[in-house]
Image (cartoon, rainbow, N blue to C red; front, side, top):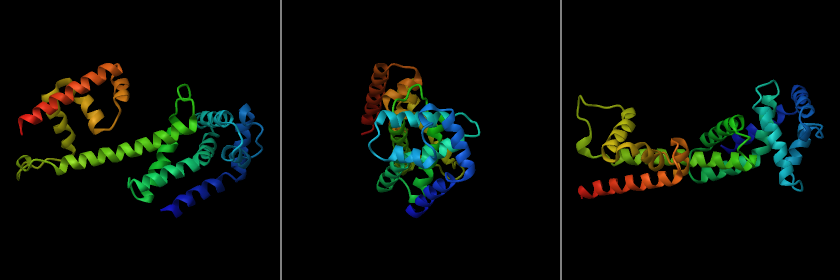
Length: 240
């Protein structure tokens, strides 16, 4: 619920005001030129939240914090907390939109967002990302939507099962077998493109993302996906 969500923020704010947190913050700013001019965490957060500072300047501050959060040293948790607080307005907007989309309950969405945000900060590739806040927030919201879409698709597949294919007594199959059965059916129809179809049509990844994952060009992936879906449509037409 929203109360619990705001309580989480209050907890983070309270932890950022402790003496030990200030000591860690001092260590961070002494070793990072973009942060040295901020005497305490509140001053840094004000600079990140209040308008008037250039986007490039704010982004440099976030880059410095992410670098420390990924360092694994004593100051990494301090930097992670500061990053979560810096992103909080954006995270709150993602939370509200996710609840509106009925992705989950308030508690479920809050838990997912915090977990994904922490993981994104720890794992962000600073060599490939230009805009820290926008990338993290966009990826979190995209992944939440895709997770819900995958769940909806799997639920739809289960609800549309052919009654003749429902196992009889003594043939009960585990729900965990469903992905393997689907994969096997697709392999029989589209061959080696089965994984590509599942990643795009079921798991919700874009063709560009699957191309990168499979080591293919986007053009080749697009052609193979189109060929596979045409084959699937042809097979389905045979049963009509």
